Image 1 (cartoon, one colour):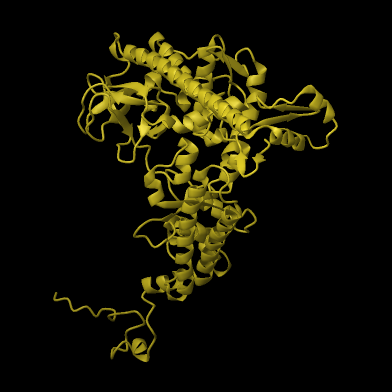
Image 2 (tube, rainbow, N blue to C red):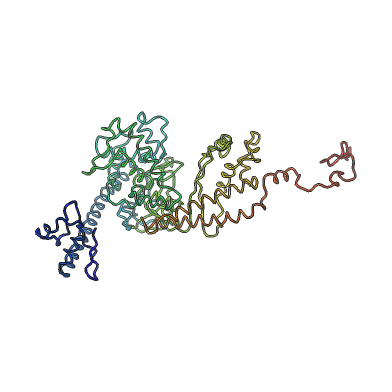
Length: 576
């Protein structure tokens, strides 16, 4: 790109492409062959181009610039029209497929008062609109779980005998559902993929239409999916939050490489790297395909009845802060079928777009998972910090045993834990009590190490909910403070006004949460001597917290009483 100045006028819309040994110019600025020959040995081709343009009449330059700009605007309009036309076709296909799910015999969808449509917000592509007027609290869409959902169970059943029995990837449940989605993509393209057992033709046909409606893996516009951003933008996001996108990308890459080496490469006929979808070659069973599938699953799945579920048709509903979350429910004639229900959070008129809430999440979680940040997230600032039990700790095994078996019966703790720091109106920045409890155990040692003895094993986690000793509390405060300061320093090193604008807003939001937590910890550090620690609490429980005096020794006038006694043996005054 060469910027051209003509006197006081900056002409920035003239584009010049430079190749080795040749200067190719925007239409209207092609030099004559004699001039090109005269300047063929120029060391600086851009200087030659500028000299040629300076020699052209000002009116001609301006006219060519306007012509070029008009051509670009026309092209943009054409592209927009093509996208709109494509979406219209997609909506028509989806609408027809959804209608079959609700009207044919043995219909899958139990309640349906919505249909697919192009969202009023163009950045959202598609959404759901109501087909009739509805009131707040009405069920708009009810879909049973077992018929159409993509879950970890479906993935494990489909890939039984292909994946190891105890396959456990770094990407967890999301990765397994992403694998199931890639299989649907392959199945939709033709003969590839693994057939899904017990799937009725109606659902199979709908899923083919649904897969074709998803944002294409080769779509140029990937702004809504940070997992698909350019490396430069991902680097800015990495430095804009304490929740690191590189960790997610590393996990995706690790799983994709393992799957390619141990599953995909062994049968490329069944697991092709690319598939043909509507005449377009798209990545499938590869790193690019797996990354795309992860982005789709993260942005479209819901956590219902303790399970992550991607439910086609329901996944098209967009977010609004004041809407209701997708909920689990029962349906069918006798109310015995479990499924997902979309409920109206307010009254809607026919043709209006309906919304749900994607739930309470931090700004960075919304950005990475859904590609946007709702207004509610900017009001409550959240930053995530991760801490790990030191593997070099001499008491590591004892502490690990406590975390795994003596913390929470239903959810044993790992030695690496992440916690949210929150700054919200009316809050003073106090860290999560669970964070402090975990850190007290991590730094338990020295004269406090007796609490790790087997006699206390069942109670030590409960002890950590309150201050142990001043030395231990000081280490906890310092460790959390240092983590906050390290994160703030990284934010300061990230260049402003580079990358997506939303990254700057995320940095500012998380900076506010870290600053407020640091202020609280500073006050805590100054008041450590005022806290009550384990030894004082224990003495109080035993009644030994008062000062000793001779009167206590004498126990009044009764010399027959020993220390701690309230009456002499046989001294009861029962009336027999």
